[in-house]
Length: 64
Image 1: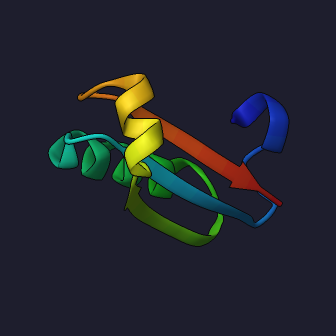
Image 2: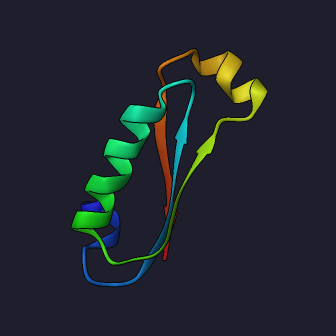
């Protein structure tokens, strides 16, 4: 994310998970500490994405 976004401009971020809420919260906290987030939230993968990736998957979606 740092390579694509830098750390100073405001960004919007979603932490996505498949049955790993504690790890998602840790990742959210790390992102909040390192970036200027206008929006930052945790969400579950859709059922299809969760099926395709499997339990224990974390992902980030972000944009300026």
